[in-house]
Each structure stands twice: as structure tokens, then as C-alpha cells.
Length: 362
Image (cartoon, rainbow, N blue to C red):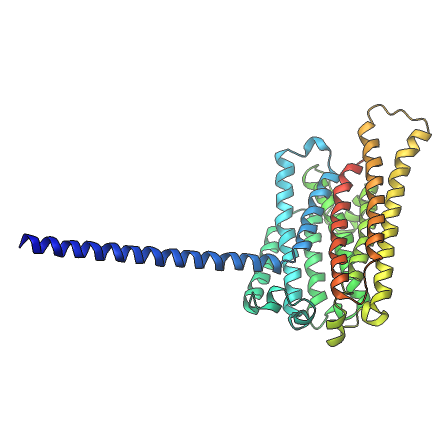
């Protein structure tokens, strides 16, 4: 009786261990599978955000905050809190705009950008729509009590992004209006908005609560006007260049972009030459700002870091100008892949210009 019971218990023990082993293997398989799915989903959302635009928005915000404020406040709680309060709605708005564009351009993207999440099927239309709606609502909620410049930037970007993509407006069908939308966002709204938000939220400057008052405040800071003008021209280059590698799909779906109307080669050449001119002028301006006080015999006491920053900035912008010209000469304008690589390099130059900007504070 005892032996039988012992043998029976032994079999039960082996069965229990086997079940536990199978259960653990099953849980391990499920866990690994869920981990892979989660990783793929996060990757799809990241690609859905168009990372180069997200990075551009984040970098421009940080650099404009540094440009607008003295270095003595950069590591204070007030600065960090204001920066975070601006960053979250700004990036959510960026995701809303880029996501909405993909929702309305899915068929075109299957030709021009088949790697994008909606075009490739990595995200469903419903998932994309949910992300876009949530980002839109969340961003608006976050800025309801924000400074007027930040609200202007978020509201204006969302409105122009909607008009750019959504029927019946769909401004992307009209190359001039499409370009103007990008110029206004990347030029005026981002640069004036973030600069004045830093002045308001960090430095306590009264900027007003109307467009006229905000523009009046901006005129008190000529450096904000200079930054806006510079990046408005850069926004023009982005707007022109972005459609060159998309010429095949735009022709197929009757989108009369500048590239379709004028030809890829002419548009590409105009865009890179404009970029080269912009960087060259920026370089000369920095060198001029370095040489002028020296030639005027002004004292350099306490100005060493400023002078060195101007000299280095001038050299960097000059190098970037030569680099974009060198790269452009080997690009085949009719080769979409070749132009796309150049276009993505253009964003690296865009980032570099923002990184240089805080070192040019007066």
C-alpha cells in the first residue's frame, strides 16, 4: 500500500513538473511574442511620426530657448519646466500634422514612400486615425492656459497642417500654397513662437495676447526677426526639395508640384543653390560680426567667447555650404533615391544651423 502510494505520488510529481515546465515555456513564448509585437508597434509609431521632423521640432525648440535666454538661467527649474511645457504639445502637434498627411496620402505613399507604416501595413488606418486624433486633442488641451506665443504656434501649425492635407482644401495640390504652409510653420510660427514663449515663460517678458501685440514684442528683439527670416528661407528650401523625390507618385495622382510642372532637375538645382547661398551669406555675416569690432578698434575685454563663437560659426556655415554644393554635384535629379538621400542630408544641415544659433547670442 505504501509502495503503491509512493509510486503514484512520484508519477504525480513528474506530471506536475512537466506541466510547470510546459507552462513556463508557454509563458516564455507568449512573453517573447508580445515583446516582439510591442517593439514592432513602437517602431511603427516612431516611423509614423516622421522622425526627421520630430527631431527638427525638438531641436529647434531647445535651441530657440537657449538663444532667447541668458546662460545663467539654462539649468534653473523655471527654464526646464517651461521647456518641457512647450515641448510636449509641440511634438504632439508635429505628430498630428505628419500623421494626418499620411492618412490622406496613403495611396500616393504606396508609390512614393512604401516604407511608411500606413503604406506598408505596419499600422492600420484605424490605428493611425486614433493616434492622430489623440495627439490633436492632447496638444490643444495642454496649451489652453499657455502663453499666447505657444498657443499661436500650436494652433497655427495644426490649422495649416489640416489645410495642407485635408479635403476640400488640400493645399498640397497647389504648389505655391503648399510651400507657403511649410514656410509659415518652419519659419514664422516655430521661430517667433518658441523664442517669445521663452521670453514670456522664462524671463517674464509681457508679450501680449493678440497677434499685433506679439509682433510688436518681436520687433523689440531683432535677433528673433533675423532667426525667423533665416529659417523661413530654409523652410522654402525644404518645401521645394521635399517633392523632388516624389515626382513619380505626384504625376500618377495628378499632384501638380513644382517638380512635376518645372522638372526635377530645375527644381533640385534651384533648391541646392538657394541653400548654398543661404549658408554662404550666414557665414559672411558671422565673419563680418567678428571683424567689425576689431577693425573699429573696440576693446575685446569680456568679449572673447562671443568673438570666438562668431568665428567658429562662420567657419562651420562656410563648410556646410561647400559640403551641400559638393554633394549636389553628384546627385542625379531624375533618380528619386539619390535625391531623397540629399534631401535627408538637408535636414542634418537644418539641425546644425539650429545648434549653431545659441552661440550667436548678443
